[in-house]
Structure formats: C-alpha cells, structure tokens
Length: 111
Image (tube, rainbow, N blue to C red; front, side, top):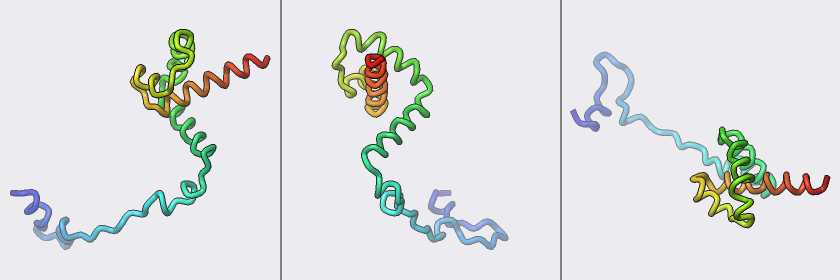
C-alpha cells in the first residue's frame, strides 16, 4: 500500500473523513501577529538572547570560566565569530560569553 493510499483510506466503520482530505487551518504568523516582536528594541532582543543562552547552555558557567582563564589571556581581542568557531558554539552564545566577561571585568576594575 502506498502512502497516498494509506492517507486516503478510511478505517472500516469509521465516520471520520480520510486523513488526506482534512482541511488544514493556516497557522498564525508569529512575526506579524505577535506584538512583542513588532515592538522589540535591540535591548529587548539582547535580554532575550542572554536569557536563552543562559537557560539552554548547561555548561555556561564552565564555558565562561574557560574563555576567561584560557582563551582571553592569549587572545584578548578575539571576535565572537572566532570564539564560536573554536568552541563549536553559536555566535549568540559567544557574544553573551564575551559580554558577560567584559562586564564582570569592568565592574571588578571599578572596585
């Protein structure tokens, strides 16, 4: 039995229409119909990225310590793209790591 035949075949005694003939309702477009995306500023988007990275990357504290202790002393001007490539992480994660380390070092310098 082909996939086409399977999708159009009714079960014996079933009052349901065949699967293939069921009408599909269009899904809402999250970009155009979602208010937060239409009014987001770059600061809002940055905070969303930071929250996502810290929530999804289980080893974030370990990555941060590794970058701060091993990579930045040798290459203080490493770009997020190069860091992402070297550690096999997303550029967004690399951006958040470098930003966190920089903000921590600035706050430590001000003490």
